[in-house]
Length: 209
Image 1 (cartoon, rainbow, N blue to C red):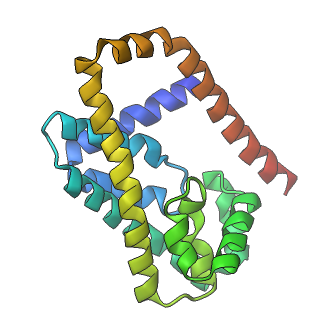
Image 2: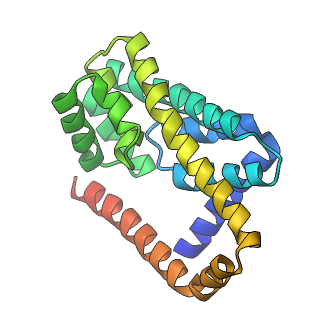
């Protein structure tokens, strides 16, 4: 079941980017930044692969990703600003967002203040949820969007660059190709185990609530 979900998710992401181009990247990264666990670690590397194929530009890919982060963050920010924690806890279960993720983002924001938005955009997991405590704290919108964009752009660029680099080496370096083929099973098992733990952890936490 998990394998089918992952396959569907990856296939859908690839279809959106292939069909929508830069707008597809904006849409997918907006979803990821709206506290919905759609991994940018899949989105941006595939966009980088299209850069390697000559179908996209690396700088534009990173910029589209950062714009998407800003747009999606508006949703999480406004929920935090107008609904607060009770609203997020009530509806978060439907996108597998539990109190643990919100607690982590809250603590991070309280510790670093407004600059936490910039720092968090460079960190896995926290980056998807940091807009919510910023909204709760009613952080001014202009600094919020500036920090979001500045922090998101290097993240998007790095993942896209990685995809472009691996795309190039896949064909040019037989050692990389052989290593990927020989590790296919191990990689698949590890990814499935991590995905299974991710889903179980969130569902278990929500049931405890």
